[in-house]
Length: 302
Image 1: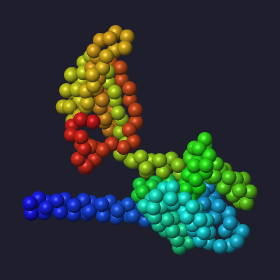
Image 2: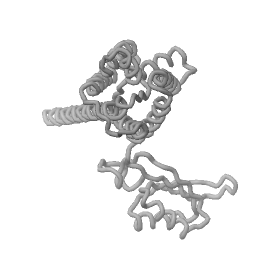
Image 3: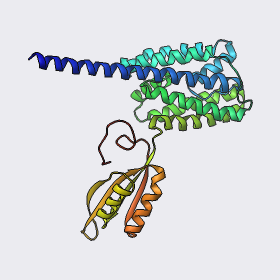
Image 4: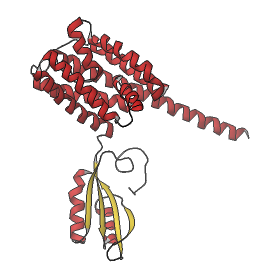
């Protein structure tokens, strides 16, 4: 009994250590992400009066009238939104998001404002990319930096026919419109460009950089193709039983995930073995498992 209890205690301790490690990793991501996102404002957006939507963009407009720091105004706008919306998202997410929002507001005011681009278009492009990377890291850390997400959630709860992405788009659009009235039409257009670049960069970080390609191969030469995938490419594959809808005949199918550099090799194998094979190819944004990541995943089969 003592041995079992000791083993259970060790398992509980290992689980606790794992949880603490993940928590530390999440907060490191939040810290790095807020610093990177704040850098986009201090080094690209603020020197050229580019306000790419959200609470911080609104804070830029207010700062131009009041002279108060952008980070401080952003914090002041976010606090009531967090107080109203934390119940909807849960206290853990709200706590991390509040920490992220506080850090980003502080970094915006602490970092020196320097024009690294010296060109408005370059500032929109590189600022948008930098902001997207930073916000993506924050999201991967299990948080968000702005109260607009919570505002959108609250509006969606009252107006369920409006989706959260459409509400966020409307909020960003209104902020950019107001900013263009203050900073000029060209600044508004470039702010829209920055939002687009930011969204793409953020999507890339959230989905992961470990991209690959997934092949669905429907063929009568399943076994030959499977053998060549295993031994020529050192990749795994999953066999699927399939039946032709028209003929009713049994047809073999394979699902295989390969890196982009191996995609041409797999196409060549299929063309050589069965030129009549039906093949579909799609992008995979993140792959976990043997051959792609260090983590232990599904052995040899995708």
